[in-house]
Image (tube, rainbow over all chains, first blue to last red; front, side, top):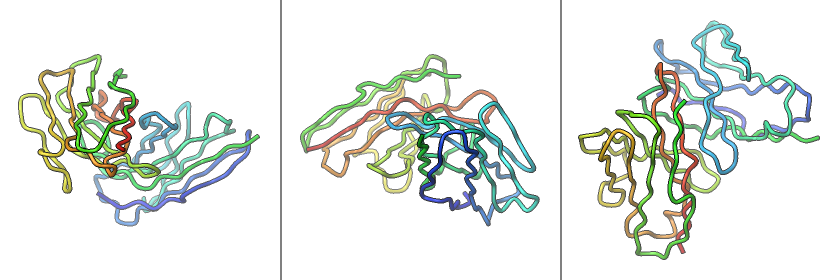
Length: 111
Length: 114
């Protein structure tokens, strides 16, 4: 599976947009990019998945450039409840495939 | 989405003892995964458990230390054997989501070994 690099931590304030970028230089042709969110004392939760260009759902947007060597998770107007660890995964990252978690990004949202 | 429960939610154990963690899913699934999350760390896959066959362990994890049972399509257990303080972690199970896009995780079992 492609190795991912993302910032260890980020700080933000309520109401701001947060962008977390993940680098995955050796992504393979068949790989998808998936983001999970983990709150303290809970298991990770799927946020969004994409292959190329832009994907948007009710929670976040995922921007993937043409070369797919990086991706950016965008959280609009964060609130205190968005404080969590965000993991970027690359590969066949759903269903019955093994998941390889990187270090993740600890997002802290303050008032 | 699948609803997953784990028992116990947390436990404190003495070194040298064993603990069996249960994972219950509200729907039938072929594959179940067991992960470990050490304090302040990311998740690491321990093994994949398929109903009706032996579990497949990842590098660094062995069956004698982490025996797994998979008696039916909605249930699995992971035993942490002969525990040491280094086994203090959160243990999570997960199952594939429909459509192959995601996995659903249980709430985890927080284990502290003294």
